[in-house]
Image (cartoon, rainbow over all chains, first blue to last red; front, side, top):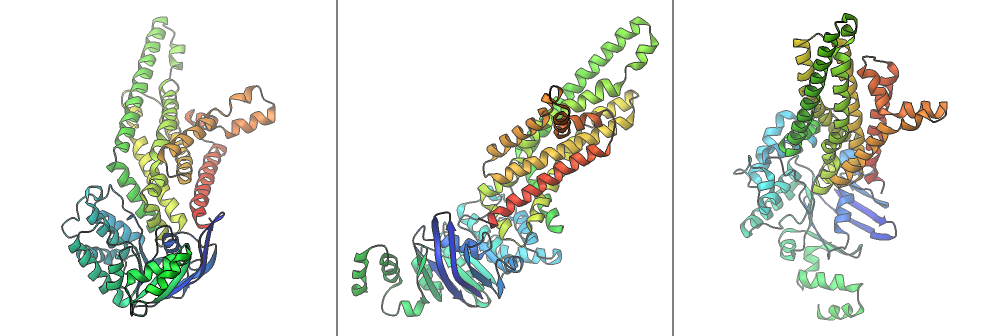
Length: 247
Length: 257
């Protein structure tokens, strides 16, 4: 479904990511982990067609993100780190706007809006102005815009940040449900979330992939925390090698 | 096209949700009203003076088009230089700052649709803005007898001028995520285009012709006199097309870097 091959992105001298490759299948939730500044956002921006890679390819449902950018973008829902909201719009007006620019036919728009209002728990606030909403609601509006057009691929950058515990459970359940017939890339710093939700884990450090494996293989005789710390300390410092023995 | 209209509708709505639209419209009407009042006053004053001369020939030469409408539109055009950058400064800069640029660029929209949407949104706003000032010539038409033809030509000129300003504003807004930078750089470009013909009087004939051709004022003042010439229409058309093309390239450039 998503096939990332040898992706490299340089900003002038700085190499943000180098030679990144991974795949995610339909029905999979891929946990995309890494310390801050590792290149997660850059990778997601390339996958979603926001900016091109210096080299390498991304294929979404068989379409190349650079060659067939339009077809790819139709199939992707993206929640960036800070939700892309218009503060002066009401929730309803905003979702209608996003639905239309994502190519939903006029006849289906109301249904799509109702569906995401319900699934993201926004039924009580459709007429509220987004700028006046709490962080949790804003995050949910962001999630609603990412899935309004029922995309085959969902790219979510820290979707549960700023939510209260009950909302977190709701959103996790929702992501799990959504993933049944689509592919989800989930970037997060909350490792228990990855343990609960994800089928596959990719850890990236300093712009390189340090591990790509199924969650069950990685956590067979250790915890995800240990795996994460082990892999991200590997190329930064030699003492990291000691972690190998402990793990 | 549908997508462009969707974006245009969003632009127009968000203009009227923010206080900027109301401040701009009120200010424009206030200044317009002040110009109109004073020009009309001066016109009345001149009529009274010439009446005392009892010379019907000179009296005939006083006309509302030349003494009220033309200077009114000229003054409004100067106000537009300052207000249009304020209207357009948000268009791209605010999207970048708020992160909604990512939403637009990762949606299945072409860049042409995004730019066209922004452009149509601001054109719709300018139509509203200029239609409001139609009240002044309307008063003249009701209570006086100006020629409607030159008024229409003058308004066409003012409208083309405003659209040209707006496309320059869209361009500068697409360069930055800072609204102030967008507004100020647009203002400077517009002022330069306004005064670029100043050295024409002392320059050589070729350079003078070029400078005069580049100047917005020269083309606009022809139209205010009631003369619609193809060369002026072509000039405004090329400014608009060129600025929109550059805006398109500038928005697209995120895909090259």
